[in-house]
Length: 285
Image 1 (cartoon, rainbow, N blue to C red):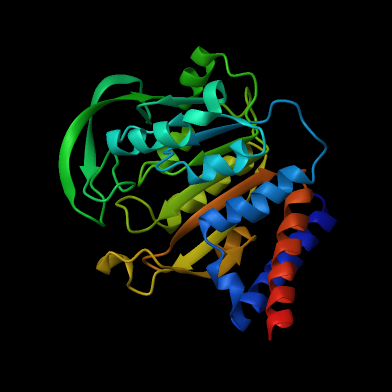
Image 2: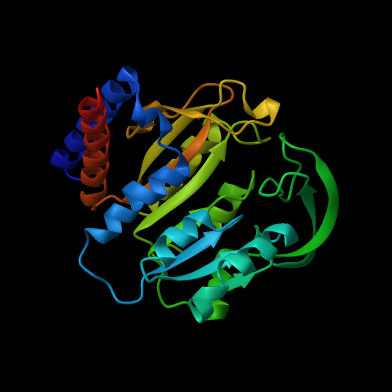
């Protein structure tokens, strides 16, 4: 990124710091809200593209994918939890062939049968036990590498890659072919609650993505102890656009939005969204 681009990212980070410190609407900028506003606006304000496509890894209830399906996109969804599969099948029946659902988990190797930990709370199941909810049992699922799997399907383009696999997120990310199918945006969940996820892992992942030509926007949240009580409310505490500001709190969690290092449009859309939230706050005051 150019010097002007780096300066603008720094300015956006400072704007976010000031707005979050003031409190209000921006504290409710959840991952779903990021998808519905920032990511959606990013694509809507770009030149129209024919056949935009989302790959949703760990689709859960499909709430993120539906944002883009409503705009005419196509989607490949990976979701190994049978409970979530039933929800997805009902939710997306009307979209017909624009949606393809696969009962597979993304992992580091293609395997026919791997233990998958089902959680009593739908959406919290994964290849390893979740620190929240209760593991209700184990089923065997097929695992796939994203690179070989998408090649086998003949996917011609991916505009948006979203990964939320309850602890296996960066393993899945590492199997994606960024040279062959470069997405405009990549949205990955992280959580230091999961074994193996920590500040060092985030730094490695960000460095790897930078080698692929992507820069990171990190959304950091705090649950104020709610998750341990089975309450999923949380609030935004920071937006980091600087590699040096990787979250350091022991129980930090959130999402990383990766964008091309040559793309100045995403920081502009992010800045506009933050200002819009501030304007709404001032208007209602």
